[in-house]
Structure formats: C-alpha cells, structure tokens
Length: 107
Image (tube, rainbow, N blue to C red; front, top):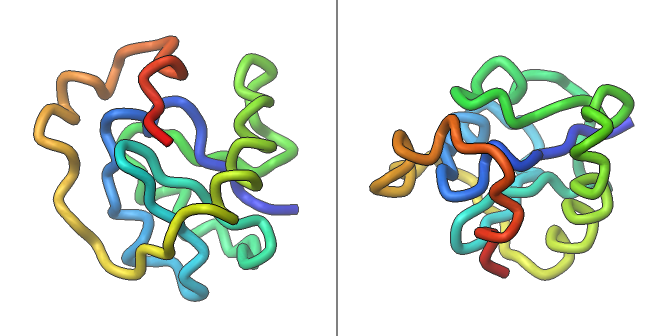
C-alpha cells in the first residue's frame, strides 16, 4: 500500500510532509505535490503533517478522490523530487478549504 496526495493540496502545496519523509518520495509540480508509489514505504509520517489533510493511505482515499491514485502514479514519473520544505504558495490559505479544485491543477 502507498499513500496518495489528494485534491486538497492543489493550489496550496504545503510542504510540511516533505520534511518528515524518510525516503524522499514526494514529487513537486507547479501547484501540487504527489507521492511516488514506487518510493513510498507506508510510514504514515506525512499524514499528520499535512495542514489541509490531503494525504490518505491508498485504501482510505475517499471515493470521490480515487482518480488521485492514478494521478499520483502518473505525475510522479514526470515531476522532480522535492526533498526539503519550502514555503506554501502565496495564496494557500485562501485555497485551503476550497473544494473541487482538480481543474486548477497545473501539470
């Protein structure tokens, strides 16, 4: 099983999760993070660190977010690793509670 970053991360991109990852499995896009399922060791450390509660165990991803399982796998092959914490996007707090943000995802 792997962990999956879901829609809540879009346009926020808090990177607190990156700091605690022991295997550097996060990948960074313009306004979203993903987890490389090939690198994730299921340690659960990132889950508690996400301020927008965007990270789920693959088996626990909400039904309306299942497309993010495949999206994390796809984008993790394209995006570069992020290995240290960065500032969140400038308007992250404004986007933190917004729903239905998939259309905002920049590849």
